[in-house]
Length: 377
View 1 (spheres, rainbow, N blue to C red):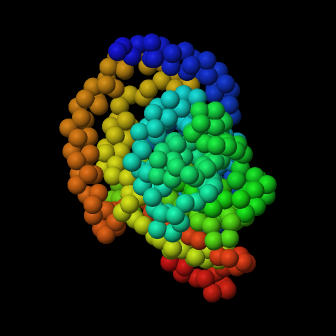
View 2: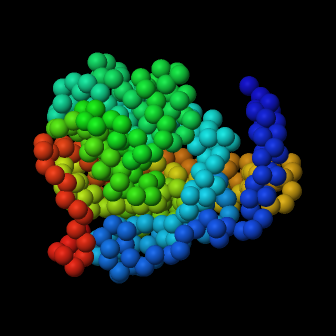
View 3: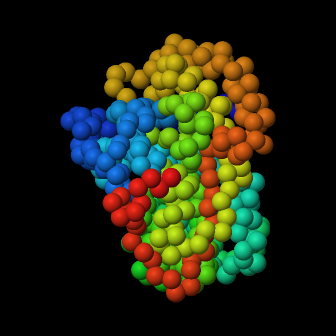
């Protein structure tokens, strides 16, 4: 099938969006960043060091992004952090708009992963009645999880209009659009399971998200979290080319020990920690693809300055990927071969925690340095 109609449609969409992007970028990107902070947002320690300096390696929107690491607890966070205007700018046309079709096609093919996530709760609850998936996007997890738990009612929550589409298409029973902390007060003790799959790292205030989860869970309910692991060996080996850094969307990356401790402070008991199972074996392939993409002439985008790429530049871009095809194949093979030992070898790019809400256990305020929490990790 010819790709020309799709290409022409994208070109028209890019041309239509270009004036608005140019207007928004006329004064530069400084307003997209908050003032740089001097303390760790997780534990309050002042011993920060630069972990990564990078740019947007997926959309190539303008800007430089810094990740700092806390010397006391190991928390990694974007510093300076994006403002609300910055979040809106860098998210636009990534999960929706120009990026929606490509991303939706990718997420819709991960059914095996989604079934594995749903099965992870089975040793601890036979048949949850109501399940809320926070950051559900277009609801693909909920749709697939019904194959594992057909009697469970799956609701989804997200900031984007994708959750409304998910409800219309029947992937979720109820689609809730808004922030989780903002909506949690309307649903006290309503759910048996709350899931956050690669959601918490996008949050400006992870503590508020965890507190919201406790608020909507029934006593004894389960909180299932999956996030990138900043302590993965791949993170240091691959540097800026490690896909889970995902700048500028990922704001907080917490080591597993930090998140376990915080859940305990909020009145949860951690039942399960997994590293091998949530590992997505694409690290080397993604790094290779990102490097080739950086070497190749850029695709047209409405935020790019200058003239749209002509036929020669498009041909050169295709040639770079054709030449890099053997490297991509070798990287994919290596990813698959190493997947079985990713957890024990410290290569896993994500971890999963399952925690139970303690019955009638009051949450405790997070402990800060100076009152017994120095060196959390």
